[in-house]
Image (tube, rainbow, N blue to C red; front, side, top):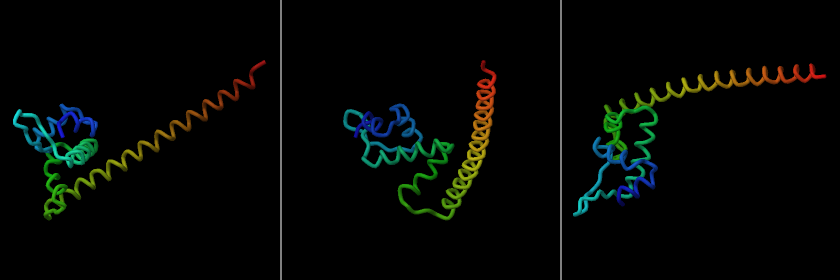
Length: 126
């Protein structure tokens, strides 16, 4: 498939796809006229790249992880690196959960106060 179709199927901009390729995260072939073409599995890789980027992983770390994703096998060093990233993400989830809980408390407190004011305003009406 061509770069436009890959962009459409993944939601990644053409510019992002070119960047992933420059970074070594994505592979393409070239037609005789120089156009990029991608295999069907590129869709899955782009989705994976975008997930990793959204989790805060830099492209250099994703590049280290991609061979594991492609082959399904890992060395002890790769497993240690992957486990370290999993721990980092677990910590990030815990922090986000704490923030979410605090936001819910603020929202609930504000709603109670707004409800109290509405009730007291209604009782003061003529």
